[in-house]
Length: 416
Image 1: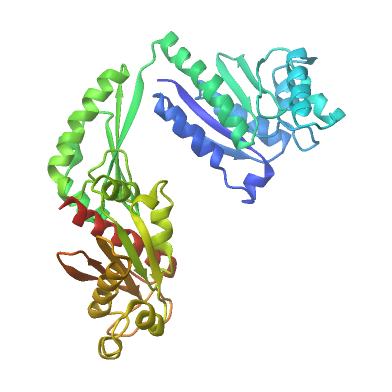
Image 2 (image 1 turned 90 degrees about the vertical axis):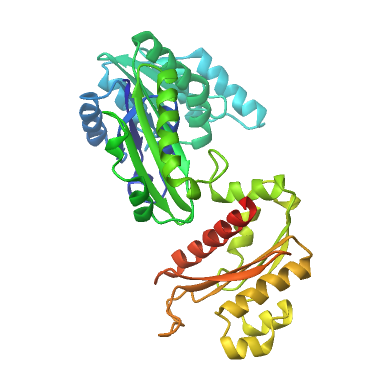
């Protein structure tokens, strides 16, 4: 099995100024083609540490993919270090020079001498042309392994990976007749990780040697990732299907009905295909539910609108929640959640209305209604109800959990 390590270069990543999204994306793409990603390393703009990182990764990697440090400024050290590391020298590339000139010509900008210096590349490398920038990528085959150096700019790196690096790696897998590993994810909602594990039981009873099952919990739900090694993708697919059938037989009530879609996408797709409409009434989430729904393209087909009613006055004035309900039961109550859901459905003339009202924290709780208490209401033409949830003490997590719990309630109604 081809083993790949990812080496990210840059002080800005080491000090936390920039999120290392490149490494995550590269790892995902390598995994998709059956490669085993064995290391993620991040190193600052430091010659000695970069060399030490390469020496360490060489011990176990067939391919080392590097990003960053290829610009024209003094802190971009990757190219000169690799040139020295492989005992090479820089040569002028007419091809790269033409790409740089074309880049500036299209933008009607004068070419700087510093930018033209990027046309100098190590003589031993194969150049990966940069169609979106000025720093070319480089591929070295030294010491029986590949060293691939790519720009740190995400959209430049991704274009090179997709058009040059991934096809090259696929060819290498086929040339070596390497085995592969393939993964499949099952999306669940409405059940905690521990309860899901109890339903599944001892996975070693249905997994073979080398096969894996991982639990990946989040506020959206728990993802189950199955990993299967094999001689080729076809045999992996067959085995993944067998394991998936076993799992679904144990947890079918909690598996999202649309394959390869998370909760928000699933709910939106169900609303669209069933031609149902939705309105929302939010208090403690302050518009997060509406924002989550409208993050999906095409939401205007089913999402009509909503109300953010944070105060009791707003609940009464905007949603027609009865004042006596608020006085007798409070804003965070079954009765208020029901009235919010039913009234927003009627106001917007939709098939469904969802409401969220709760105590997100960290203040505002009481012995009867502790921080994290949230009531979620759901109303349709057939019925209106509300459920109570107690999430915990973290304000941000409580708000996120409220959003995805509300979506899960709607998902169940749509599936039923």
